Length: 110
Image (cartoon, rainbow, N blue to C red; front, side, top):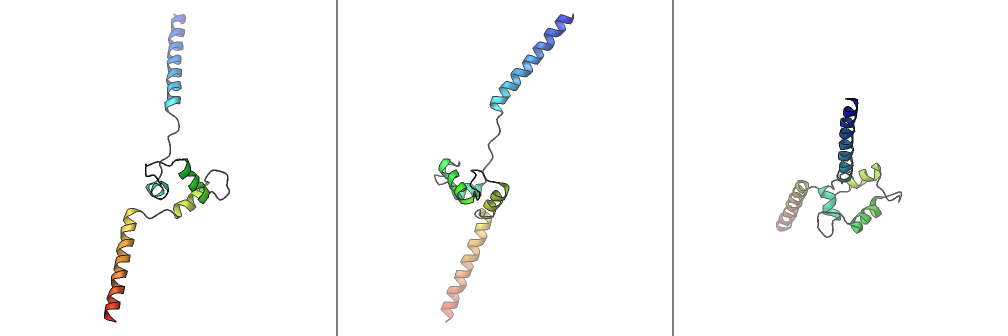
């Protein structure tokens, strides 16, 4: 009876070990999503991913201490410098059009 219990326990443990091993291969750290704004600014070939050259451009611009990684402070600086979101862009474009229209009207009055 004890021997049978040991075999059952050993079998269960081996199955758990196999499942963890399989998960280790598939369950690697998920790649972090890159924000749409960063892709818009740095994804030159517009493939939806950042290749080595595009990543190097980001590091060249924002990696202040030149350690090859972006610290929290460097990431914060990058976020400040990111392009406007589409909704914000529309608002800015509307504002610019309105200003141009007002300038034209002022010129017409003069």
